[in-house]
Length: 332
Image (cartoon, rainbow, N blue to C red; front, top):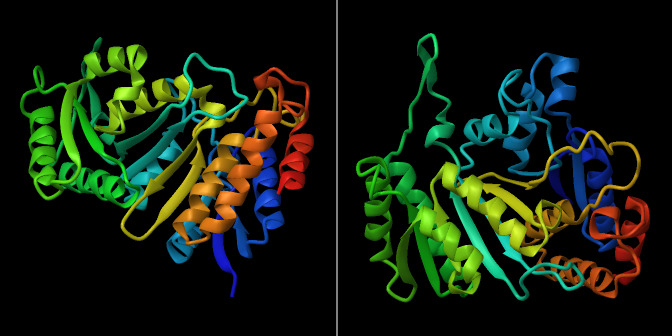
C-alpha cells in the first residue's frame, strides 16, 4: 500500500511549489497517497481557523505531512499557524540542514551544517501581556524536559548521520537561570555520547564565528528564538531561504516544510523556485525509508542547478517554475 501523506499547499506561492514537489516525487516512482488540506490565511477565510480540525486529524492519522509556506501577519492579525502547528502536534525538534549547492553562487563553498532548534517553548510560548500602557512583558519559558529531549535529539541525529560535534548555543552568561538550565541539560546528555564532541558557545560570539569561519561547526543546538535567527543566518551562507529545507519532528509525527515566506507578490505568476520544498520532500522520503529515491531526486536537483541552464529568477535566471520542475524530472 502507498504511504498516506497530508499535503498542505499553503498560501501565496505555496500551491505552485507544492505542485512541483509532488510532480518530482511521483516521477521518482515513490507511491504516496496525498491528502490535501488548506491552512493559514485561506483556511481562516474558509473555515474560521488557520488550522482546521480536519487538517490536524489528518496529520495525526498519517503521522507525516509536507507543508508549503503559510502567511503570518506581522504585529497584528491571527497568531502564527506555524507555531500553533508545532505546539498542537508537539513537534519539538526543528531540523534545518544548511548545505552548499553547486551552481548557487554564495560567499562560501562546501558548507555542511545542521541546525537543531527547540520548537515548543522559550519566548515562542506566547506568554505576553501589557503591564501598564507602554510596558509589555514577555515570559521566556525554559524547562528541563524540553531542553533534555532536544539535546538528545541532536546527539542521536549526530550519531546516526556520522556527525562529529554538537555545539550548544546560549546566553547563559546573562540569563543564568533559563539559558543556564538549557546548558546544564545539554552537558548532562552529552555524557551519554562520548564519541560525539560536545562544546558550547555564547550566541553573539556564535553569530560572529558563523560569518568568519562556518567550517568549525557541525551540528548546532539552540533554544527556540536563537535557533530561529541562526537558522536563517545559516541559510544566508548557502544562498538564502529559497534553497534550504526544513523539518519539524516529534516522537511520532513529522512535518516537512519550506522555510521561506509565501511571497504573495509573485504568487500565481509561475516564477517561484521550488528548491526549498523539494529538498524538504527529500528529507521526508529519507524519514520514511525511501532513501534511494531521495538520493536520486537530490542528485537530479543538484545536476540542474550545477548546469545552470535552467534557473528561476531568484537565482539569476528567467525560467518558470514548471520549466525548472521539468528539468529536474528529465534529470531523473
